Amino acid sequence: MQADFPPASFFCLTNSQAQKMPCLRMCKRVRKSFFIPVSVMCLWSAAGVVAQQPKSATKPELSPERAIALAEQGQCRESIATLKRAMGAQVASETQKQAGVVGVRCALAVDNREAVLDFIRLLHKQFPRDPDALFVVVHAYSDLSTRAAQDLARTAPQSIAAHKLNAEALEMQGKWDAAQLEYEEILKKEPNARGIHFLLGRSLLSRPDAGPDVSARAKQEFLKELQLDPNNSAAEYILGELARRDQNWDEASSRFSQAAKLNPNFAEAYLGWGVSLVGDQKYQEAIAPLRIAERLTPGNPDIHHALATALVRSGHKEEADKEFAIHRSLSSGNQRAAEPEKPE
Image (cartoon, rainbow, N blue to C red; front, side):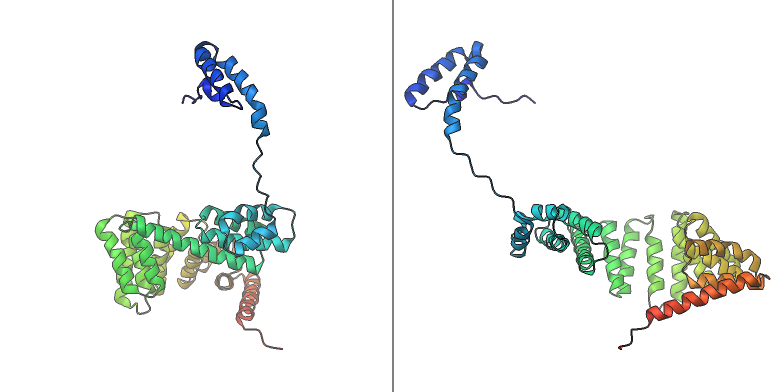
């Protein structure tokens, strides 16, 4: 792109009109061949005039305390930048936290989402365990989620993503029939959309009134999902759970093992696999998947109980006793954590 240079007459700055006119004429006469020398000369003569003009007063930088006060009064746009700097400055910890908390609220008030994320990051970094900071962060994420959902509904209301989001919201409200209609509407438009058969099947099983007919329909949805996406480990896992519930041990073991193969970090799949083998009285075979489940989630008491059962029934009593002891310890700890504190 070519830069825009002003004409030579622009640089002829003088104190009086009488002085200005000769300078203008001179600049016009010579600008074709002597543009640079003349313009520099005229600019030099004007330097004194420019220097004599009063400088505009620079706005003083706000202090963190002043920025917090302004933000609390609703003057958010003026204070956000200073609030950010305050969190990285050498100021009192309480002032930093207050700047972060007020900054989040201010950034949300003016819908500056980038600034919201900056304040959240700083609060996470500097106050990772502070309850007040975490409280604000929770609400900030919730607010951002709501705004993103509104953006989606406004910009692409008929998209698959919008229907999925609406269905999930209906599920959270317990409106199972309406959620089912949302998923079915997606499948009418896109019969081969990946993930939708799985979500529909999961929604059907989540209904409090899910009977045998509903479970059979859900199973068909998971099977359809696997036809579209054979690598869906979650669909394999739920099919395994359905088979285990019906004590179809061979199918359950096959489904769980496939889910574990697709997702090697799927601890619940290894647990279901091991439990199914125990149910089928294949105790020695059950030890290996249960050991993997134990390694992935050592704090799950159900894994230790299933492993202890497989060990004791396959003749490994000493190892089984250790696992039973771990199970008791974890179970009692969970029970104590669930009990309300007694007043002194």
